[in-house]
Length: 185
Image (tube, rainbow, N blue to C red):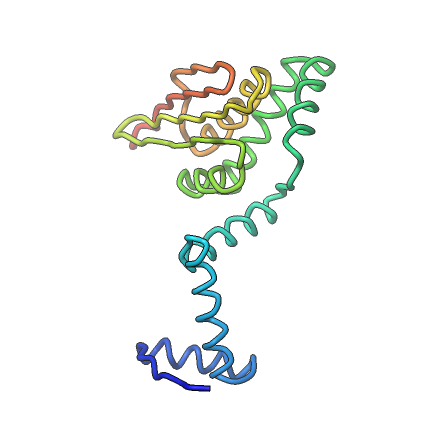
């Protein structure tokens, strides 16, 4: 088998050499890294994206998220809303959002988690301005009830991050929330 020399920064080469000494040979380890980078590129992703997404999935798992079939989640949300009542159900979603807002502790980390974990959301963005933050969430799959509940989850999370809700527009599949940032002291 032919070989080719690849150049790398000394600090990176030293670190790879150190890691490979625990994993086998340097040759095998470098080839494995290159194969995985090629594999990622072949599906249209960079190795950095794959690793960042994996970190997000691990963080979501550590935070207590689980994968649930969307139909089951939507149907259970409808049942809870009808049987338990609007007030208790929306409060539960709001309080859960607060917990996750505290858990992530950072608006950008929370936004990344939502984008990476909630696959039923077609668009999610938080635009920050000097004194406000505007959250937009779109999903053609959300029922009116689920949209209301998810908006409460998002409101709770952003409240926990220190933002106060000033405007709320929620309709089936569409959530637009405007928040006011706290005044600097």
